[in-house]
Amino acid sequence: MSRLIIVSNRVPALGDGGAAAGGLAVALHAALEQHGGMWFGWSGENSGDKESDRLQTTEVGNITYALVDLTKRDLEEYYAGFANRALWPLFHYRLDLTDFSRRDMAGYFRVNRYFARLLAPLIRPDDIIWVHDYHLIPLASELRQMGLRNRMGFFLHIPWPPPDVLFALPPHETIVRSLSSYDLVGFQTEFDAENFAACLIREGFGSRVGTQVFDAYGRLFGMGVFPIGIETQTFAELAAASTSDVLVERMRHSLDGMQLLIGVDRLDYSKGLGERIQGFSRYIETNPASRGKVVYLQVTPKSRSEVPEYADMQKEIAELAGRVNGSLGDVDWTPIRYINRTVKRQALAGLYRMARAGLVTPLRDGMNLVAKEFIASQDPEDPGVLVLSRFAGAARELDGALLVNPYDTEDIATAIARAMNMPVAERIERWTPMFERIDKHDVMAWCHSFLEALKRTRVMARAS
Ligand code: GDG
Image (cartoon, rainbow, N blue to C red; front, side):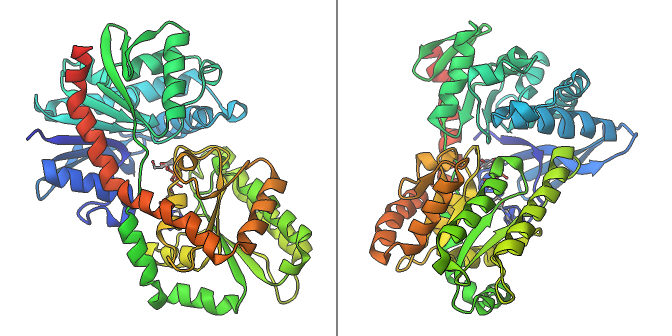
């Protein structure tokens, strides 16, 4: 069997099966164990001014971890700069926050070339290469220029924007062209795949030669939709066993009969936190009977603090939560509990299960795993209600959720009220098919279906 080579910007902790890093890492580790192979990426270390071509390799069973340090400049330009201040906002339709600089763009392509230079000598002719996410779009094209003919796949975890948004990025053609160097390009939803196809076709960069096959820049390549899943059974089991968790018990005790609403998001402007807090506030204002009866817990670990927009938002959201508590709260009731630290997975599963409603209202999201984790964690006999943004990829699958427009705070407030009053029979009726779906399409199934499609793609591309 061919070896599998996974390439991602960050490589999860070695040797623990990825357990600390979540479902995606667990699934990719399982695939690596099955095929044997390598996980290649940035070590997470900043080497300052010191450039080195040193690869740190560690063998664990049949998996090799190959890690590289990046310099301060690389991190500023490639990671914090082009990836997180240009591609991330642009791909989330936020042209207003897109900060393009030619210096950062050059750094992005330079680091991709550097990764390719270190990776290429480690690759055997029949290895299959699977590259993850927007940090590494140009990797295949760099590897191809070094003569590699391997089967290469790419999966985009975030949305792909419509043409008029993408075309605002000066190097948009290079980005599209880079993707045509893969054999298979995977997206979370049909919308993303169609946006990509529209970008390719509208500017005449390429043409569709089969339902899922494109001809661009002298190559045929495949495209597919692979909605990512979670470890559904693990979450369900963690949640069911969570009564013994100290934090979960403390939470239950402190609620003292009040109902819980929960939100869990990295601190990121794409997650719609401000609008959500306002929606919750509106719900309390328009439902006076809820005063003193509900608590909204928002778990929000900090992320990307080196990017100025994130540091600003940290302050903004904390102030907003504080203002709502100040104006609506009482001596014995704090409506919003806003926590900026990471909660352990078992506790998280227990908190999801305790909640009457999960608030997942991103302004734009590739998939949103929290929506699926919330569903997986519910008690089948008394499930909570998912309030879900129509702009999350997960909304394409989770049709038993209350779908909302995340920009419309009235709509969020109305959905919260509906969730809080929903009879148990309706909650079960909505929840059961969603659980069955995410159980069937879990993260292992996702990983398997992408790899199977990648193995088939070239044959298909040649035949068309
Ligand atoms: C990208 C795309 C796509 C959060 N706080 C805690 C914690 N988390 C975990 C959640 C969940 C994960 O972080 C966040 O996943 P999301 O899917 O919500 O979002 P992104 O980080 O933006 O991920 C996204 C995803 O890639 C996968 O393809 O779904 O659309 O943007 O798993 O549980 N976990 C723990 N404690 C916390 O406090 N243990």
